[in-house]
Image (cartoon, rainbow, N blue to C red; front, top):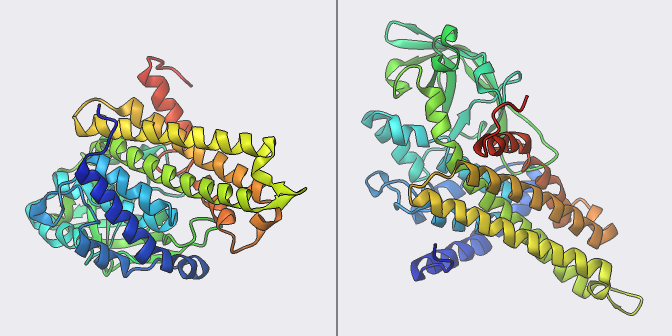
Length: 382
């Protein structure tokens, strides 16, 4: 493995960094205050090739690898992890099954516009009674003639209020267990489809909704791939999602660390900067160590993924470590800032809130530990 980015990757990182600081950063405060995702980012990023960048050029992508994706999410998350999350969903789990298994008609109607940022995608899996246990979903899709009739609900859905379509998981045959789960594309204007905005204490500028389906009819051609293969399509996306999530958490942790370091150098107590006190110096040193460790683990997993090598263990490790590091960094940054951190508009206050969700999304920390345990040969962990 080459531990140095290529010249092309360095140029890409610089371009993403400039975009994040010049075009994304000015939108963050208003988006956080109003709990509203700046939807104008989708067409702008689509125009630049920053949405679904790993997808083939024939559909509007740029064919970049997982390492380049990690570069993108790390840089964007340094400015806003919540806004980055909405773009990541569109670039990953909301569209990857269409890319890998959808018909050409679905790709032209939904995938290509999503890559260009002209349509916004969301992914509907989690339900009130189903999260980590995918097989526990209760939403159903019953075939009637040339349509599927969908009934059920989804919760905590990123991009749910602003999406043009949902990639939805539902049972087409509950008697088969997870082998009876299928994936569908459901348009926002489909009769029987409704949604309600959810308000959160963290990741406030990431749009989140509860979705409801009441005899919602979708055409049979909106089935993605084959009936009963939805669970397997989901499993295919797990490694990729965990790697990119890890990279974004590294970026957010880096931002929290830099804010704490700058503050500690400027804040003077007892006649000297608080960074020079051993208690704070050791905190900052440990934060730097942990972030660098998480960064290399994320990029190592990305490198394995790009080279077609097994990386389930490494992806889970990277996601687990980066999530834990982000939260620990945010906690320590809060302590270094002291009273200044508890103000509502404090960037450290935002990191403190946002960091907790890192241990929940893309599989909880406990799920990552379960995956790792199985990868090292421990099968019965109940």
